[in-house]
Amino acid sequence: MNDHTTSHPIKVLLAIEPLMYREVMASYLRHHRPQAEVILASGESLEAEVERVRPLLIIANEPSTTAKEAQTFWVGIRIGEQRIDADISIDGYSATVQDVSPQDLLAAVDRAAEELVDGA
Amino acid sequence: MGRSGGRATEEEVGIINNPIKVLLADDHTLFREGLAQLLTSYGGLEVIAEGPNDTWALTLAQEKKPDVVIMQVQIPFEKARQALLKMRQIRPPPKVIIVTMFEQPGYLRELLDLGIRAYLLKSVSVEELVGAIRAAAFDPTGENVVISLPRQMVEKGGDEANGVLSSREMEVLLLASRGLSNNQIARSVGLAEATVKRHLSNAYEKMAVHSRGEAVRRALSLGWVTIGEITQEEEDVQGEPGA
Image (cartoon, rainbow over all chains, first blue to last red; front, top):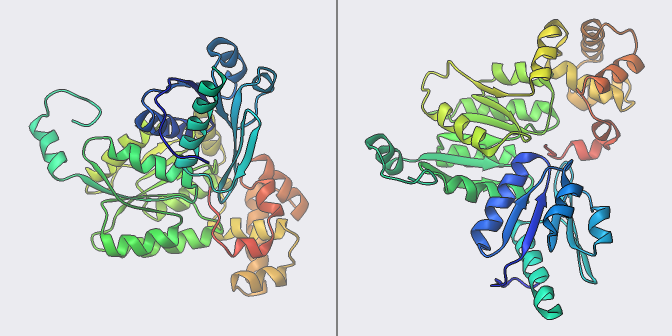
């Protein structure tokens, strides 16, 4: 995936469990993409927050039905015993990343922002 | 300083000039790399190295002499036990903080005996972890430990204090739950078959059960083992999965 920064403000809804992972990723995204608005939600409140926030990109453990219906871009995080994999779906682009890194999530944010600009 | 802002006090200046050296081991790259950056953004903390498992952590701890080691509980537990025992032989010994997804009070007592300074689940906030790091670093005697567990789990653990298995009993029970015979377990963990039988017998007694099937069902219901651990192939267990 592309790994360049974006200057376009986008809303990212982050609903990774457990809490420590969610906080760590939020901090990372805010630090490296300060123009992105990162909103946190628990797994339980994900659906309601999708309705309320209308994010461009959702990063969560389970791909959200609401997100799919809303055609929102999403990253599904699968936490295994030895590594974390991610399923990325952004406007027709889809990929599975094994042993996903923070940089992969930044790339997903950038790609979502790109799609926002291209679609504008 | 760091995230708190404002003018630094003398104590804070001291911390900045002499930050707590942290070594971070976790096999989840996403979490580990992100946490390393986040901890560094706090005043008075310096992540001097980060890597995937307790074997790596032990090697780096011997070389870099960190103040604090953050690591997970590796499976099989015996590997974690050996790593912690060797960690204690480092001079000065680092303060070890366990950050884990395991909600297994059965391991907690054993880990405390091995000298850990804190045990936190990954379901708690990073703020609690930072507090635990500072508490560990500034408590030279190690008289106090930080344990962050759901209240329900602690209360449950207290009720069942007499039913807590040792790490060896837990390991034998896990292998038995995978369908290994006593002989196979004995060869796997390097014990005599009679010793394996004794460990199983002790485990049954503590768990108030009378068979393997009962023991496995009870261990599952108590959260001592997971379906994933039971179905995991033994070859995988020889690796170093953690949580």
